[in-house]
Length: 230
Image (cartoon, helix red, strand yellow):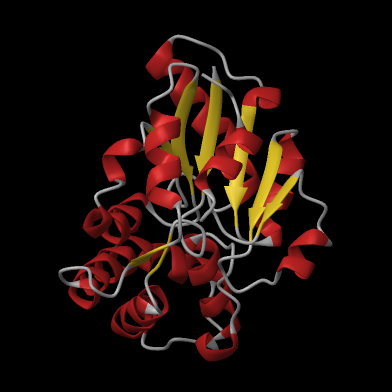
């Protein structure tokens, strides 16, 4: 059995800036400042990493950041849900629903999430798409601030669910940033990059992923390349 782990923002969907706006509101509410949010690169980073980076830049000590983290994420999820509302702001990337449905229907494939989003935020972003039930396991920014540690968490949960082990040569990590490729490389998983986010195909090619797609619109070609085959 092969484990396919998908990133969310820029890979599965775009929420058109809802995440950044919700983070800014939550930081202001809990810490009294957003820090240098307008110039900060959110791409591929976990939610806890984002909060700590911005608040350290604003001069807050780690103890104060840590003390406010739960309240910050509660405010973030509340604000994110309000911004997204009924979901018109959330756009699913080309071909993704059919790719996910076909993969999740295969007996030799398990589909999951590997994302820097905290789990509650991931649910809010994916709920309007109807795709959430297709992901049987997940590893989230709320599990660890270090993205490189998330594959081990996802594999452990997949083993608990299925009773099978998932060595990294049976794991594929799909994302839209160099940090997604780095995450796969760090553990020995297969790296699949898709240029539907804010990195160009050339930028992603420079990271040397195992597979690179402009998007997943050609569902048949994507599934053929991803395998495993039914």
